[in-house]
Image (cartoon, rainbow, N blue to C red):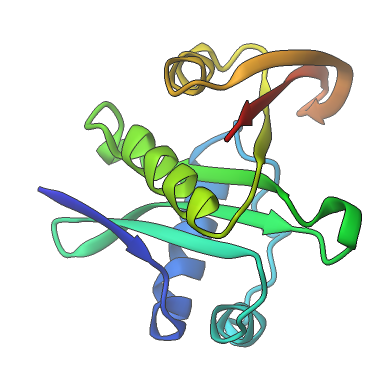
Length: 163
C-alpha cells in the first residue's frame, strides 16, 4: 500500500537519498550520479519555506518510493505555472505511484491557484510519456537533441496541462 503526501522538512535526508538513488538507477533522470547536492540542508530549507513551489512524496513499505516537485517562478507573469519533476524507484514501478503523484501535484496546483503544469520527458521514455498523456498532459513541442546521455544526443517532448 502506498500513500502520497506533502514532503516535510523532516523528510530531507530520506528524500535526498531517494533522489540520489534515482540518479544512480535510471538514465531517465536529468542529473547524473554525483551531480546532486549531497547535504540535505538546502532541501530542508526549501521544505520549510512557504514559497509557491512544493514537493510531494509517495511512501511504500515504510520508505519514500517516489516524489514530484513542482517549481514555480517568483515572477508575477510566471506565478501561475508550475514545472514538474518526478521520479519513482524502479522497485515501485507499475504500482500506480507516478499516476498518484501526478494527481496529487495537479490537485495541489489547483488549490494554490496555478493555471498550468508543464514538464519535459525524454522521447524514448514511453512509459512516462503514456502516464503523462493519460493524466491529461498534452504534447506541446519537441526539444531536439536537448540532452546528452552517455555519448548520445537525446530529444525531449515538452508537455503541458491546463488547470
